Image 1 (tube, helix red, strand yellow):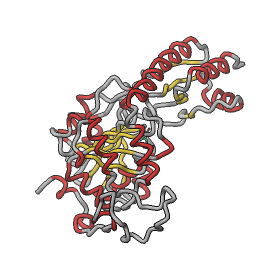
Image 2 (cartoon, rainbow, N blue to C red; image 1 turned 90 degrees about the horizontal axis):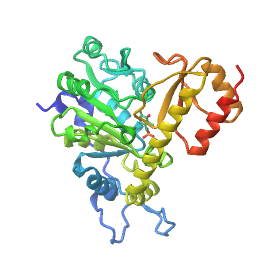
Image 3 (cartoon, protein in one colour; image 1 turned 60 degrees about the vertical axis):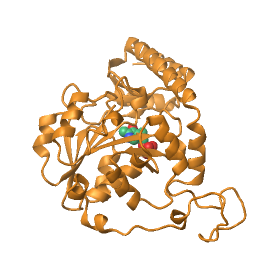
Length: 345
Ligand SMILES: *Cc1c(COP(=O)(O)O)cnc(C)c1O
């Protein structure tokens, strides 16, 4: 029996998915009297392509991965949720993740009534492999590894992720939302080697398209087929598909943005390091810095008063005293530094 057949919930395996009108004919040049749409061309009167073929063809070329191994969702949040709904039996199965990490995994697990087991990172902010082995059991269906990790900003060791791919009996979901800002390479190239690997990426960060909500999941064809079977038929709207299609022709611009952000990250790191208010800055592989302040909460409120909004992570496990600061434009970063220089102890 295949891995997916072993792990999938019975109701999902047996599900007959909704078949939409546009599933049956997907050409452009027909007379469409099948979907009860309004025939007047408003620009958005037609339903979007439910399989997002044009967008996927471009992503497939860009990432050198076959069309059938790409799932597109309403943000990364959609594949996160669908993976849980497809593979985790509420009240019975469980999910494992590192801690601290991206908050949506836990929220999604709670919504789906799936037990969530968290394993604290070690003192190097790296994965505690033994800790994960200890909490894993035959009902552990998904393991979420965010790398580079939010909020700790560092990449998890590649060898540790590979070890987990080789030993964990469920699916290993590697969230690469920040991969463009990282010195590490993506795990996409490992998909052929690990049928239990799911890689998540997004248009929300490097691509500067958080507003259109487009997330990607890459995995074996069998896993992707499951996600496609249970998604809302028209989960990616026409405007998103159109804008992303255009944006995918501007890879150079995205790369330039990333390059600039990385330069700014280094400048900000050096300058913050000189501030007497700052105790520590974690090594970052992402588009933000985790900065420990002597008086984190007070600095946070002070910046807020100056209309500079950062993220208070000072109550998060292992992140006591840390504020998470996204890298902005140079003048925005300078405003931050100026405000901090005027802070009165
Ligand atoms: C920002 C972020 C995402 C992106 O989520 P979207 O729903 O695609 O906007 C995913 N994972 C992590 C860890 C993030 O920080």
